[in-house]
Length: 491
Image (cartoon, rainbow, N blue to C red; front, side, top):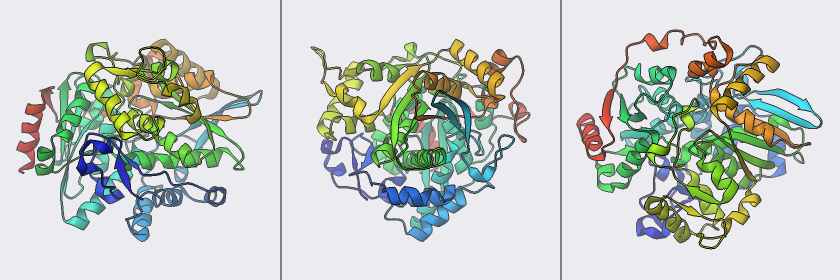
């Protein structure tokens, strides 16, 4: 299996296909594009039948070995077994076995329609990001040990990525983490979960701005190739291919758990901000998983919903990005969206590069096909199964109350966005699976507003906000950020 950049024609350095281990520790390709396999591996019906009997760790191995063909299978199997064990994942709710890793729960079933919630918050930081980040930590440590090398991870978070990355990398030999987050724009729980870590290899930087300012700095540093090489910079943001492909696994797991035969289809609704999670669903569908629809659920920051309704991709300015009660989706520039557009335009790297250059110069592009637009590829979106919807703060409150009253489950704000939009897109005969984002405790301010009582907290997180916090506050200044990184790496 080999990989190319979505902008491969832009520089000679990225025209040569890379192997999985070559791109594992990096993020952006040298030309500023994102890595994708030269072709998606296909899954047969016989494989799906065999996979129904596997544990999560075994399933992860079978899928990942199709993408990481340069890692010895025995090593990869050991890495997936180490990652996806019941000892790492908690029994988050009564009646669920932690051994299931991502259990399903039926919420509604009537008139041929079924709504199912797939739990993805059983990891150590109580969010779906753990599903990929725990594997990434083990892969990084494995790869660095092979090369006797070190890595300085530079990432950005709107909430859950940061804590998942830091918990996965803390104490890992040869790894430092520099994590940017928007100052005072995460929930109190999310902030404490990150900033309370005292490990010497963890550096938390609160940026005076919004998430997009953080993400722009990560891309700027990644595009400074001499600095990136000297400081040994890698990334764990969803632009990292290994993280995306690790998320493909739970789409297969959800499908296999919700069906009894391969002639059945399911749809997935995915709370979406940076397009990484739903991009993994797109990849699973391209591999042959029988997915009917992929529904992107946004909050008030509805850039993705606007595109899937109109064909117009219009990035918002920082001042136009709303600070909402589902803050992990407060994103106006979806960094993984380029991977889908690359497929949508027929894997034309020149076309992809031109469109995303226009994002930087003009703030977006228009594929609606109307006079004056940049093209008409929007007509092909339906072939890939995408639909979308939007949820507001009031929608979140109403959905949290409904789900608590009807099913006795307290959901987080992002999952509420997902359920609200999923209900609008359900079809008879096709099970709709909503991917859970996090445990409700991470967003207690809104749970208290919706239900009048605090969300239940798992053991060990009761007083996390009271822990001592270690972080620095910095402006959204790339030069100052580089100086900070350099001064803390000794390189």
